[in-house]
Image (cartoon, rainbow, N blue to C red; front, side, top):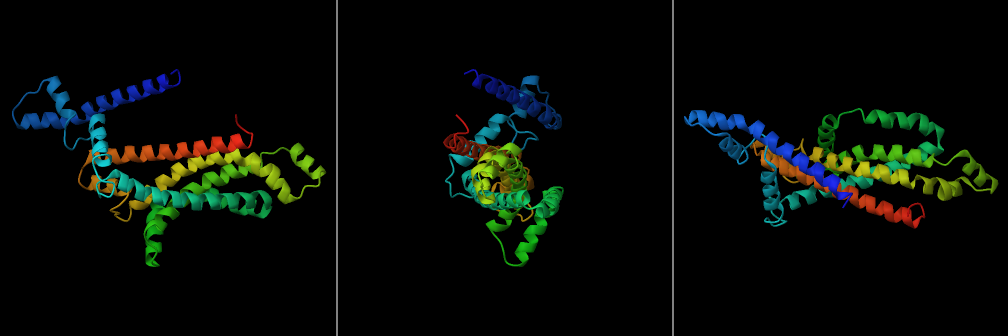
Length: 287
């Protein structure tokens, strides 16, 4: 209870601020409509109207909650209006991109640690790659891959991998280099080969760093999948829901898709955290 109470307090404060923001941002439209109709509204009337508009500038929390309920529970998961359906489309690209990015990141990290030439050449390029805005490079990747006949999930997965590989590279390099000189010298004394040093010391020592970077990477991978849906005018996925909501001024739909994306990211990070605890406990590195 002592851990939950501060979280609930922060959530309650955010909801109150959200309601206040909705009233403040939507009040002008209410006043304009009342002026055109020659009516005068009380403060209570203004508040009531600002929290029930069809296309508000900032939807109220209960409007977003109602939209989430309607598009998750009350819609079939195969319906094109179901957030579960769109979430699964985005999740597929996210997981594929995360797998590609994680695999590439681990391989690059191993090469960087064991090869000075790669350390001097690859690492600066990996850092420089992250300075390119993803909104600029995503359309280029989509167009180039479409021109050679590659469509569907793979282009979005590549964009996800582009965002997720860098945290894995940095975390894994840090982890593989975490053993101190005394530990390395001890294994040399025992006549351990480079491969044995990697398996018995460097790799186990890197696990806490790896899982920390995986949490960042999987969240970044989800962002990449959503961004990959935007330049193509996609009709499926959470990015598509954001696009259609912006086209038709459906701010409630936009916010519901954003909340769904945040919940999906939190669930993915939580799953990685559970795997981390189980793995480290099995390795004797966490109680």
